[in-house]
Image 1 (spheres, rainbow, N blue to C red):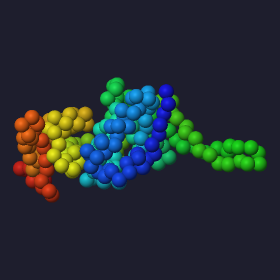
Image 2: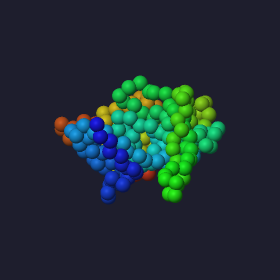
Image 3: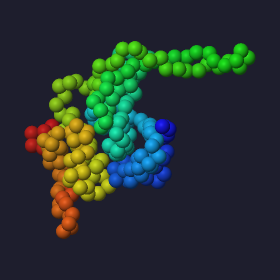
Image 4: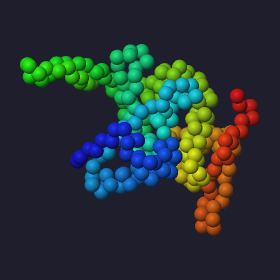
Length: 227
């Protein structure tokens, strides 16, 4: 088994708009098919957007660019700074379509002298902790941006961010949108409310086509009773 690392994944996109779901998938899906044919693993690396309350505390919605960067891969992991220890890093599960969510791991970056006596250099290495981490990626990010577990508005805002990304480059098939939402842990009820808030429209395609969702240009409708 061989491993191909793309760091960062944006360097593989060429002229593709990294914020458009359909364009990103058009690049990543052939890569996935190639990996399956060649029986290799592909590891793509990207970064989080800047922390802030507007971004929500769900790890899957904090990656830079289109939701396809985490929607297309089978697994996604996040490296997050420990909010209580700035020298400690946490490797945490963000998404896994192949198995039950694993526990996380903690580690620190340490330095040591390597090389021959007259050519010594300072190098870094990873010092892994023995005990697994119980905290989730969402909880670690919530601690980073100051969210509390009682923030009931966060799932709805995250669903709206998801819809904006999915529909940013034009209408999308309803079944595809719903399947992606389920994969990201967005409930049907929350998705419907987010659709209402954004004024998302459902229209029938051609004679053989199914229903499609689209979002008005700059459209946003505040739900009744929402703040």
